[in-house]
Image (cartoon, rainbow, N blue to C red; front, side, top):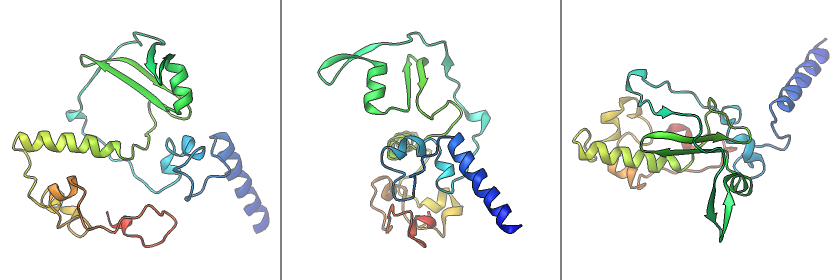
Length: 191
């Protein structure tokens, strides 16, 4: 009976993986590299343990959305005029958003990405956080010399707790960071 249950579970897992397009070759060693990353970056919660952090609906900037002003367009790229579809295919782009004067004029998703699905942003996050921190510091809302734990007490015992915001923004903290997701007990889990 146990063998039957196990076989049923394995078949169900394999069927689910096939239905959502999960590559059979996906591992923690290769999820960041092509071609597996095309699926993994739009399904990160199925690869690594992550959680959704809900936003405060009272503090969300609502951006006007209109039907795509342009369904397809061309731009000079790599020495020749190319349609956006050509560029998307050749560069493995998962999503594209074009804003003009505070309005969305083009929004399109490709591959496994959808409007409702989070996508791994990697180092793009540093640029966004840096811009926001700079604005908050200029407005006097935060002090870059204060510790991370001053603003986020829950991080007091983490690897970043004693570091200043400036230290983190300059990427000079003393963490022993490694992107080897197969290693157990890596310092990454303390952040």
